[in-house]
Image 1 (cartoon, rainbow, N blue to C red):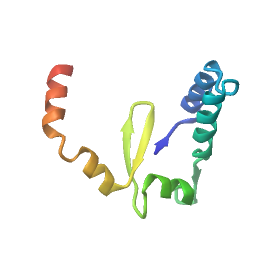
Image 2: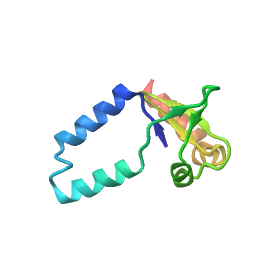
Image 3: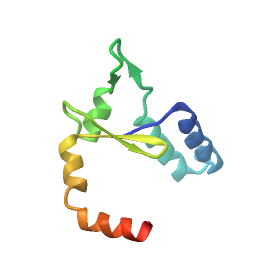
Image 4: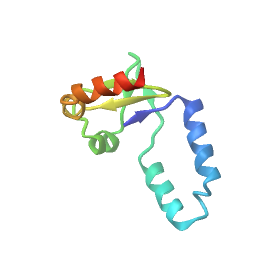
Length: 101
């Protein structure tokens, strides 16, 4: 799940508009599916992000959330799912970093 700053989210929406997401039937369907899975982030009195139940369920988030900085967005993960996703990739990561740097 992604948490976008408003300015970055507005860029995403602008790209969708340029792709004529509301005109082409296939693009419109994809646009509607994306918008179905969006919500404004709401902070409670203690500064915590409230995640709507349907989005948490869709992302597999049960109780805890791991926040991972990812460029212009923050990714939100179920901690166990994240560990499974990146846990065994140390060799791939080392090779990627060697080629990247």
